[in-house]
Image 1 (tube, helix red, strand yellow):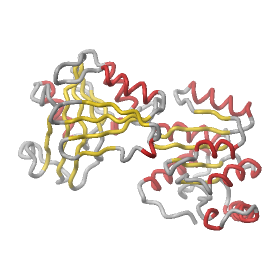
Image 2: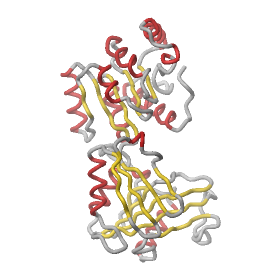
Image 3: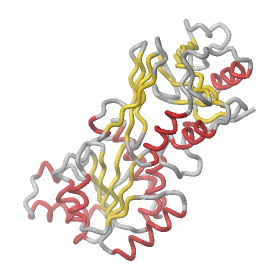
Image 4: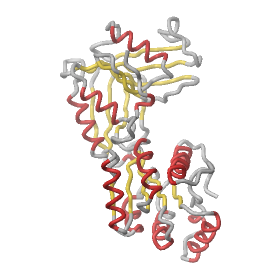
Length: 347
């Protein structure tokens, strides 16, 4: 029996974010398989709408749509070919669901899945792997693309999107039409090619961020970029001055900027632009004493108090760790909390 990889993320931390490993498996399936998308949930659910599970015809699974109970049932049904095909259909689990009598959910909630038969070649009603290769190519190039499915007709449409921030929610479902975005969910600009960046970049990539590392110290930047690329975590490396980098990339609220050089001459350049940009998160490394001094400098340089108040410093949740990897985890945790509205405003 195949084992699901929780969350559909790349277990190696490489690739291009949470969808990469699943897309790789889907595109490599020799005879196709089944794709399941969480359409809607009621009550407690470990996976949000838009979560994916792929089961190939050999029984290998990647992704997740529940805590595990539904995956086992889907695997069994895929083996016995008792799933909707070739036309896509809906599957209901839990209270009041069509499968509820056989498989009530332990959480007591309800779950609706979109089930699609993925064939090796396109047919009249079942889309083949060709359009998935287009999706994977877009993700590999760190571009955003929307996949739209009409349940009534089975028609699939791909729509390239220039900017993720302008593309709407990651997933929408109106009962007949599903729209899911693929590609980087957020952008992270890291100022400084040091040990914390080396630990944070792979975490951010696994969380679906497009990572930009900026450091005008070209030798240090090139060394880190080569190490990250060799470990399956390529980043966009920029050796221009931090203010120019932030000005070029911090164009919407899904961008985060974190200053990590410990050099005020570099960090402050980035922060002066970031704090007055649309970036949704701006943080800086340093003790509370150094943060107070930084805030005073930024005010003296003419930044409005409201802009300076956006600065999160010391950056990251207070987890007590001091090592670079521990600080990286704390920063990633705060990014997650902010993105989900679970983190208070900067103080």
